Length: 324
Image 1: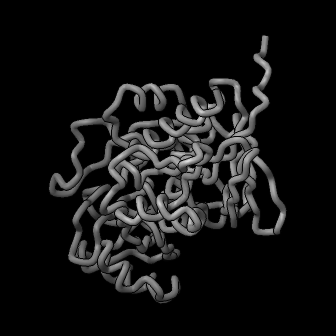
Image 2 (image 1 turned 60 degrees about the horizontal axis):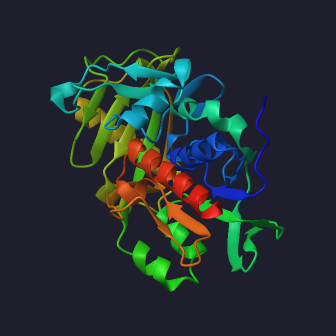
């Protein structure tokens, strides 16, 4: 017999790993949270970019490592949605002593099985919060409002500082967190690139990561590569256009591998304004003084997928405890 849903309401802002980890904890306890996501798809930096329905790129987070039994159990529970990536690594720059977990066909596949456990509102930007005696009133970009008993916020910390800008204690607590941007290049070749590696970290002074996306499980078709610029280079060039960045990053990629490229089918850049956590919060989440709002994400514990999972999991448990 299906357990009836609990009547108290919880909103989750952000549809990345932290948000879905919190949602899973809440759903397991009988809640169906409402999840607001400003983008058109789920995943956050675990999003997968599909181009012309032909190729797909993990243009943000590349893989997940496991440190805790709880995260391992989560990944195993995803069944065929999760797989292990066994790349050929250049110069031992990526440790492969432990499995590298990825979503099969795309990193956001790690979250797809949880979609049905939330009331998902895509293309919906939360523009304001007001804590009252009876709950938290959320204002959406279109001016409409909804009220919730508890709110879990998992958006990047610079955006969270704005959203909770009237709570000086929370703003001050978040001010210790530092996050680097990242320019990402997605390039497709007409023929396989003639190199003997699939992953390479610390590529050059400008590039921090290169990976053959096609080498991951469940990926087919043309030879696809993802290239990440280092944080300092990305910050220096942050406000340039995508069209301007793509040929520069392609040239840096070519210089790094020192071979003639086959014909390039497409090369597109994406700007992650808030990408890699440099200085984390150092705890799983923050809580407002009234106990109604919880704020966290990978920036709370460190820039890893498992850090986002841990933060979201703890926020879900804290929300349940607060709801009584």
